[in-house]
Image (cartoon, rainbow, N blue to C red; front, top):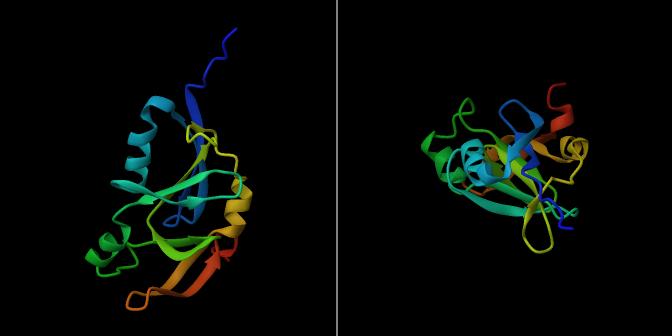
Length: 140
């Protein structure tokens, strides 16, 4: 008997604009288009989490931020463990098998909430984060 493959995937969206982590259910056949829509353009891999999940972000995020002249109302940044440089705009966490196939994200959204940092100040000349705060504490 053959196994039925899932037709949807659960993904986590890191949203530095609203300072929240959202879990969405996306149709497998629409996954690439939805990631592109969420991050606002072409996307690239920013890294992998210990659980094997992959983080996707806007491939042109830094240039987009510079185009907006670093206007904080239009530019939002975050950092995640194992990737200290700021990531611009929204990120999408997708589960990934050892063979590279997509699956439901296995990273705990609460872990993301406590380990993702909202970048409050950034020096574009040096590329360094000047001030950041945990998503979980950003509203306090």
